[in-house]
Length: 228
Image 1 (cartoon, one colour):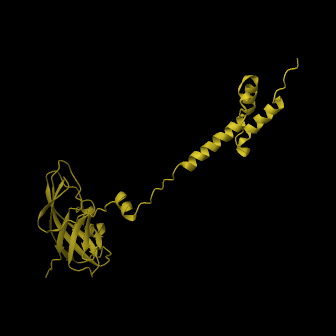
Image 2 (cartoon, rainbow, N blue to C red):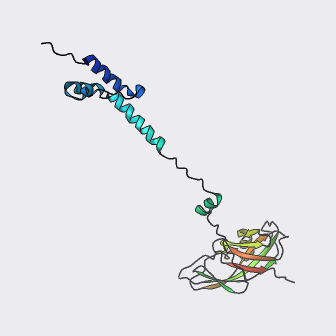
Image 3 (cartoon, one colour):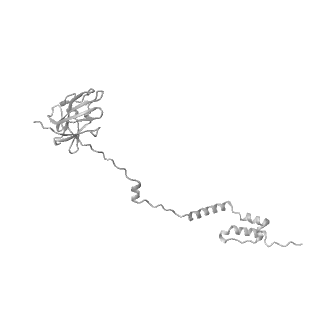
């Protein structure tokens, strides 16, 4: 007896499976219930299974869809007020200027010395010294309060005029006029009178401040003494 012929041939099954795999362009393909059983269903499943290339394309498409669906978050730029608040400029420290004291008062100088500035006065120029202007002699009392011999801090001192110009001790003029021992050491516990010479312009004025390169707190007000 002749078997009834199937309504769908193997060729029809393969073709339907191909159409289902290409559903992106022609849409979903509805298959009769007969494809859901037996070897025909397995053939359809194998025919419609995506390849590795296809899987990669689908994953990439899914990733792009996810990025598109995510809202963009914009971070506003900080305003000038916020910037100034978050990154303030460091404060610039202004050193405090110590007012000068009057001459004639003992002043501590570091841990070694007690200095008493007596005064300043003009002295005649010397033929042994080539001067730039006029010579001023500063007279002081130095007391060594340490337990060792120490050199007086004369080379650290500056004579500053009212215009802010400073002048250092003249080593040559001090040796020629004040004597060779003007800058020698002072023994421990010893107090001595010493002098030093400043070579300054003739137009410098009559008032000054004696200052120190090393100790900003050492400042003494001076005025030229007239000698008749």
